[in-house]
Image 1 (spheres, rainbow, N blue to C red):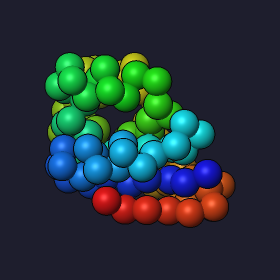
Image 2 (image 1 turned 135 degrees about the vertical axis):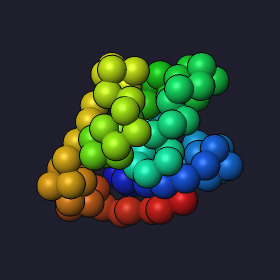
Image 3 (image 1 turned 60 degrees about the vertical axis):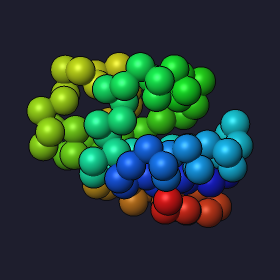
Image 4 (image 1 turned 120 degrees about the vertical axis):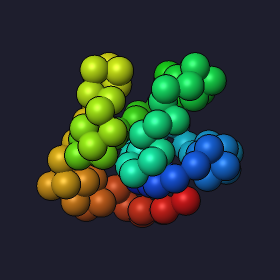
Length: 90
């Protein structure tokens, strides 16, 4: 299993999804949490295991808009890096 981390833009997410396996986990952090405001990304990620860095969601005032997604703390982020056999940042 791989933890895929997206920090910035949709180009990175597009590339990541080409290589992401069904059992992998996707973590959106930084400005990448904004991608889930777009319907195309909501649909593309509907069947994926998606996590959001909660601090980044809150910093952008998106808590209510992204409440349907699983938010994790910094500690949860560290746990995810240990649970997965590989970590890739796009």
